[in-house]
Image 1 (cartoon, rainbow, N blue to C red):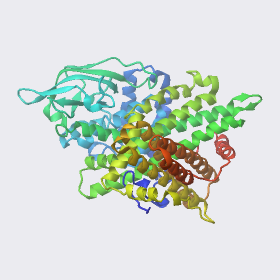
Image 2 (image 1 turned 90 degrees about the vertical axis):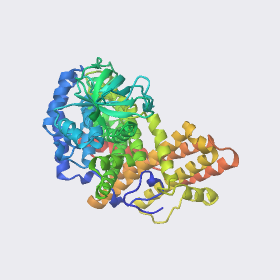
Image 3 (image 1 turned 45 degrees about the vertical axis):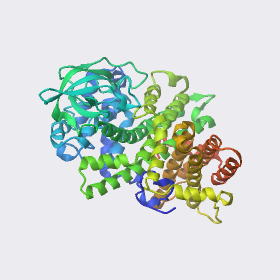
Length: 592
């Protein structure tokens, strides 16, 4: 395994990374911090005082709030300057996604407009479409939406029935069909609509204006959460779409849809961080105020455990988000230097990291679900009351495991994308794996005398990589082409890969930060607990995958190798978590 600065997607499985080559949040520049502060101030003045009104589903109110965000420039962060945007890099876009993630329903409306409502036209549209639509979407003059899902086409998006037929005079496509779960649909001015032209097998994409004859907007859906977000069905009855409003080429729609989903997954992974930090701070403050048995509940070990685990998962996930964001920016610059158009360069750079964006979508959404659940528990009975924001956060969080491709689909994508890229020769996964498999009986955990703290932790991570590629190789050998249909086994492997990527990102972040600002023992507590838990998780998932695929002596040999490769020193997790919690309790907020 060798070092490489900008790895290909999934290549982290077989290559090591120098901590100094990654980007960490502590390196945000002053401009990035100012943009984030503008977003925080907007939430404080325009969102938090109106949360109850927003949750009543007032379309006029939400559209008005988005217009105000547009006046501040918040809708054009990712849009180039020539289309009235600010042309910020991907790291900054992710920071904005994180910051606005604390905005409950507003966050959903905002992210939909800035992402899937605008970027298909920005990335795949022609110059005339960008000037006509993107320049107005960037300022909030127009509000955008994205229309892919249909009653019979959810995860299998290409099975949609919405149809477009070319008119006799060749000037319009006549659009007929139905879309559902359309965010911003109740008040959006533009819609990116996916439909099949004639009897095409593959979707095409179109820009539709909501006020055109034949576009019928349904009432807002009643939902468990994100109640302030307008979610509707839209019906198309002989809608005349000018031929110049096709985005990209005929039959390119499915590729556009998948590419935009890659972007949406990664940005959702950032968005949940803002919600997580907000929930943790609310929980810490409540624990510092609430008294039971003549003491603040923040003093109880069980509460400290919850607060610490919330912080560990958030800090670790955040580390991975900004690591891959820098990879995207690096690749984007490479593509642009090679003469790529900005739009295609951006979406190709994001789409390249398919393994990582699936990881971050799943890990982030499940992290937030854990945090809001424990947030309600810290609040006790009050957490179940609509008076408290944790109740709203709990309900709002649940959709994230379904948005942007379900977590079930994304778990499969983690493994499928990683192995396909290896099979295409983008990196060598199966060569090192075969070597390990053939020398299983001599595997050791490579413990070295006198290891430094980070040498030890990075050795663990290197061993986790070996355990994972050994599991991938052995299950592939046993199941062959049937592996991807054995979804429980794939899920085991996917969860192993996720723990590895998040754990490595966390360790590299703290190592780099120590080099910049000196040692922080609390952050080492976060690493200790995370990697200790990850070792146990990886061991369990590997054993489950092996025993579900392989029998007899081979399975036992593999199990023995996995036990060696996932061995880590014991950690006093109780005291480590208490130190992490005590730091937050002292600060009265999440502040790492």
